[in-house]
Length: 96
Image (cartoon, rainbow, N blue to C red; front, side, top):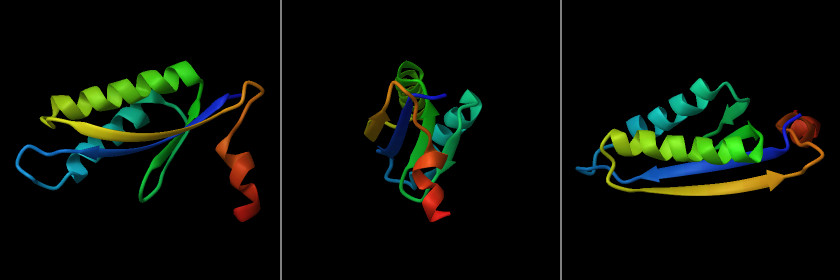
């Protein structure tokens, strides 16, 4: 069982003030390629995994967006960590 939930909202600066959505889409592709359980929401994406792998994933996401040409990024991250295990389904089941 995963021990961490990480929610991230990326706000990339774009080189010429263009739409940031393609940059955000690239970050989501990195998440999808990781194979980790995740949920994309309108303002942030939540990912389930181990703390170290999630922090590495944040780095990969930032690197991918920079490689697309973004000169800088703000990544707002929230982390819920429980060594005994945590998952999205258990936290939200009463609302579904």
